[in-house]
Image 1 (cartoon, rainbow, N blue to C red):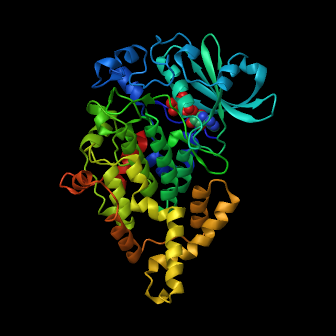
Image 2: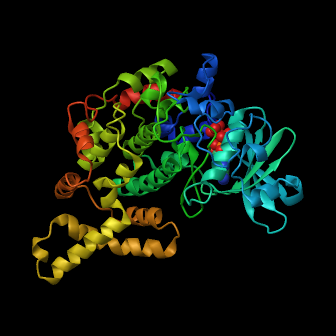
Image 3: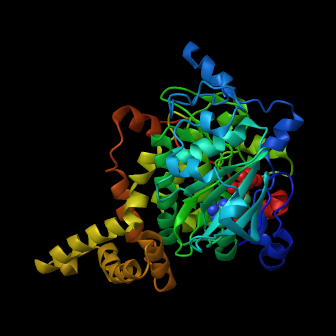
Length: 469
Ligand SMILES: Nc1ncnc2c1ncn2[C@@H]1O[C@H](COP(=O)(O)OP(=O)(O)OP(=O)(O)O)[C@@H](O)[C@H]1O
């Protein structure tokens, strides 16, 4: 497990990584902390944006826009204790708090570093099971919120499960599911540019969990590969809810929060919604597809300026090697027009995602087989026969690995991938026109103010600028 440290400092393993992967590391890592920046600016004050009057009490409670999780969750002054603060904490978690963590677990080794301290690998004395233990010092309301939101989201396969919480006078110990597969960022440094097949399968899993968060009224606000952990079988787990906020329909957040390279432009300028996670995920997709961050700079101000003003060009340079549907999705996620930016659900229904996922490949294969049966195989577009030959590999991956989506993509990639040839891209482009987007949104998406166009910094520039990231 690699160590990391958020903030203005570099990652703990940066030197090591730089030796082996200097350019890739520098291109996709993000080292600035918006919190540090906002502390400097003395304006790291989170608040509800255009909140109706009724939200006043919840703002007092420090959960700015939280719909009630438990009846008492948003009406108790901050800092009065986890149990009262968190109405929805379950029995198992509450019971864990009655003992000291040392009574139940043995600390084995440090496996990660965060801004709140170390994350430990610990072993249950009763069962021998291994967990990750994160200790949060009391004092900041965000600590309570992180626990509350993890509890709220726990249970989804894409979220790191919170097993128990131990409270001490000055801290909480969170005993979480152990993700032994490391962080996505570390895999990205190893891999560099992902094939579209593999990127789509990873990204689909990321978007599923983001959609889940949004459906549950949670904005993560710090989507980045550093916060996406992997299990030993390669399953994606979203972690670090330290900046997450509850939000209900129509409400907005304000306050500078996130990681600079991934932060959405509206975070820098005013009120924002869950769409900030879509932007950040778009930055992640950009990094997966071309192994570079889209917005770069040699200072925080320069990065922010790029986020607000740089016009990305998905038509030339490295993007010429990427399929049109992938570029289309990028543009729909990285549009500064928040109302035109697609939702998590729409991302998941985008043809590029659908095409590359196992279910879609299977569907296409079935269609291909049906056509074969009626003797039309010689009329098949190349795309279908290519997909069919790959499906067997998917099945093998699914049988051997619980993470069928990711493993299938890995197995596909380890052998021969579907190539983005002309017919393939064209077929996907045709599929895009069939995406079901409501009329108003379609017109917004396709209108003149739609996808971002224009120039992107070249890799040359990126190498120079990305030292800071
Ligand atoms: N459940 C887990 N399983 C394995 N490792 C973990 C787990 N949770 C955290 N880690 C490791 O600890 C590191 C820090 O954890 P986390 O990001 O939750 O802490 P943080 O203080 O909120 O960090 P940040 O400074 O990024 O906000 C992670 O990058 C990861 O390497």
